[in-house]
Length: 276
Image (cartoon, rainbow, N blue to C red; front, side):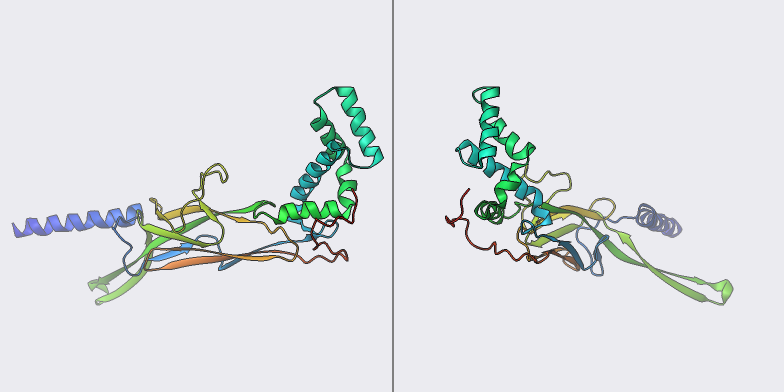
């Protein structure tokens, strides 16, 4: 009976060992002391830098948004009967040719297709108005998206001895991924989403956000931070993940170069001294 009990215990221990080291995962209720968490592929600090477009005094990340704002404002101006003689003449000719109800199409044709937006936003007041449209709202110049993976592991150690070599022994250590471990994600600025989420179509996750590791010991999130909308801006964001016994984090710094333009574009677009 005693021999049978010893054999049974031995088989049980062997099965547990085969599960842990063969499958590469454990399933504890909580991360034990000595567990580690790392953000895969990320340094302690990540930096993204945009140059400044001196022609329009906006970061390069803002050029498309600035252009769209100029086109929209230009189109409204033409529909209100304002603009250069050539632009208005081309717009009115388009409307008369294509029929009533085409004001939107014709103003877009003149401002976008014929690039009259360039002439329109060269006027200082109009340029300021487009700049202020972008500066009034975070994210107006787009976003940076980061897929961040946190790996949770438990430390392991083994030792062996051999009577054949005079009782010598050896020890080794390693780590094993841990599944179904709760991971807490915390941000300072920016928004968190699940990897499959489409930002804008769904609301951001709560901050902090609690997730659990999969069978690879991985928890993943999509991190969204806004691009700068002013030249000379520097924005810093923090993202961390922890399992209670250990924490890992990364700092994202996003900057936009200083403008070298001699124009002062810092005044309000309410300046009525300029004309359209």
